[in-house]
Structure formats: C-alpha cells, structure tokens
Length: 454
Image 1 (tube, one colour):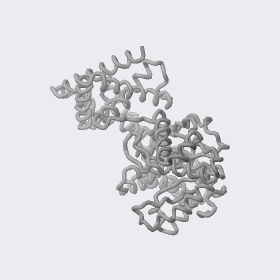
Image 2 (cartoon, helix red, strand yellow):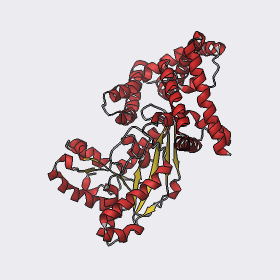
Image 3 (cartoon, helix red, strand yellow):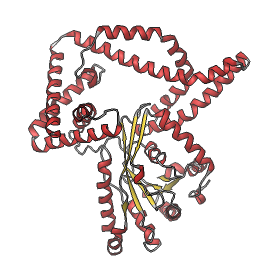
Image 4 (cartoon, one colour):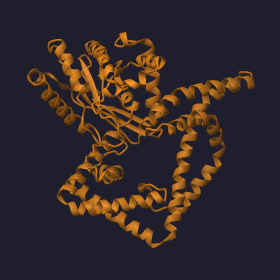
C-alpha cells in the first residue's frame, strides 16, 4: 500500500484495524461510546472533521467508529524517512505540505489534492482536523481554511456534482494521558456544501469563511467547549466534580457517558450565566474554587475525596486487610506485566508534547503486551516442557493483569483515604477554612442547578 493506491481497500489494513479497535475499545480505554453513528450517510462523499486535543488518538476515535477504511492527513515532516513514510501510507495517512516546510514543497500538494479527490470520489471517508493542530484544553479553537478549501475545490473539479457532506464530530476524553479512561465520540448531522456553491463561485474567500462558521456551530454542541480563558480552571473543576450532582437531580444515570456529557455541558452553561449576569458572585465563586484546588493538590487529594465524605478508619483498616491478603496475587500479576505496562509509560514521558503521550502508550502497549505474552509463554514452556501448566499460564495471564490493575486502583484509593484521615485529624484552622470554602462552592452549585432545572 503506497500513496498511489491509498484509496483502495487493504486486507492487511483491515486486520490491523480490527485488532487496533479491540485494543482501543476494550483494553486501552475503560469505556468507549460512539454516539449517533446512524446519522452518517455512508454512501455519500464524506469529509469527517473533529475537535483536535489528543494527537493520534483523535484520528483513531473517528477511524474506529465506523467500518470504513478512512484516509487521514498529517504534517509532512513526519514523512521524511522513507520507511516511516511507507508505514504511514499503509496506515492511510497523506502528508500535507506547509510554507514552513519550504516554499518549494508546496507544489507537492497538487499530487496530494489529486489523491484527496480519489479518496472522496471513492467514498472512503476523508478525515481532517479543521483546527490544524492539537491543544491540551477543552475548547474549540479557530479553524484553518484547509478543510473547506479541499471540500469546495473537490466539488469545483467535477462541476459541483458530488454533493460532498462534512460530518462534524465531537471527541471527549475523561483524561488525555492515563490508561483505562472514558471516551465519548459524538457524531452530528451532516453539513451539506450545496448551499455554499453559488457564494463560492462569486466570492471563494467569503464562502470558505461561511463554511468554517457553519462547521464551528455544528461541532460546539458535540464537545466540551470552555470558552473562558481567564476562568478556565473554574469551569473545568466544576463540570468534572458536579456533573454527578446534576445527574442525581435530573434522575439520570451518571455512569452513562452520554448523560455525563450532557450534565457537564449544562454545568458549563450555568457558570456562563453566572459569569455574565452576576460577575461579582462568579468572581468570588472562582476565588474559592482556586483556593480549594491549591489546598487539595498540596494534600495529594482530589475534590471528590474531600467533598461530602466522612472518612472511616474502619473502612481503611478493612481495605488494608484485604489488600494484604491478596498482595501475593497482585505481585504475581504485577511482575508478569511490569515491562509491557511500564515501557510505554516510560517512553511516553520522553515525548516533549504531552498530547502525544497517550498515542505512544497506545501504539507501544498494543504490540508489547502480545509480544511479552508470547515470550513469557515460550519461557514457561521451556521450563515446564509445554505441558498443561504452560496452557494454564497463558490463559490466566490476562485475568491476573486485570486483577493487578484493579488492585492498584483500590490501593491508590485507600492511600488517599489514609491521607484524608490524617489531614482531617489535624483539626487546624486551615482545614476549617477549606471545609468552609467547599461548603460555599457546593451550596452555590446546588442552588444554581436546582434553579436551572426548575
């Protein structure tokens, strides 16, 4: 598979995608929900566009959502090595050349544009991130013109007969970097380009801006979009920690990612109204939030560890006893999974761009785990002459891995419980001040949610 036939179906790519999707949906992430995929008209000429916050993982979130062999674009500098370039072509990724890559390279975009036409005409589904680059915050940034130019020039090349549709996608992560997080991928209604044809014929620049504005309006409702820069932390803190309270008041299941997403959107809306209508109140609210964040971070705790929680010494003792009893099982599972788990973590820390770290973890873990399982099984087989012990070993390894992961989560929660008990037992004025601020924050949010729902 090379650049010249990138739009053709590939059996090898299909196999890799099937394995990659399984690892992505069932192992790397705790829960993945693809919402409203039925809105996608699969037999049309499609361009998929999404908010861009998490490097390669954003492309995978779209690529794994639908049974199509999408073609993607990426910056050209990663194609410099011929071997890497061939790998990227196999993964159905096309380069895009920019002025910063050298003015002479821009002429190569003519060939890339032709391949883009082939992809769109072949109905593969073309994926491009309209923001142009990724950023580590939950906000929709201004769009580049590239996606709109590609779409309208594709139409122009065939006398506006394709009826290309742009599919807006909102990608929402519970955490960008960590293993076993939640991912919600929201698909919106298709945006047809036909209403922009005449404007494009008369004034191409204006038409591009109109398409940009229309797509921006389509993506915003599908993602967590915190517009405020000054009070970003206040919004992010509130939507994370009070979405469950909102769900309780609405009678929604908080564990449903769609409900959680809607609740977070409503919390943001409530705060926007407070900021616009009661700026002094919002400023005081934000001041208390920032103070609480600083204090609980110093204590290595999360707000949920402190909020509405009465730490129990008996609970801590019982959990500690259970952890001690099952520690041998944990150690066995931990040692057998140490290298495939921690090598991706270690490698990702060397990556300068934090938004690429989860991409490195995902790609490395996907190949290291089966590789180490295979190697450890061979070693076990040589030791025990490939008998029933070897079979039992390979069958039970995934279960011991899952057990060790769950054990580590319980251990960390118990460690936080210990910190909370120690902190509460100090009974100093600082704790009283924090508790007072937490009461103020929760009372304000509770009142605003109740008023909003009514």
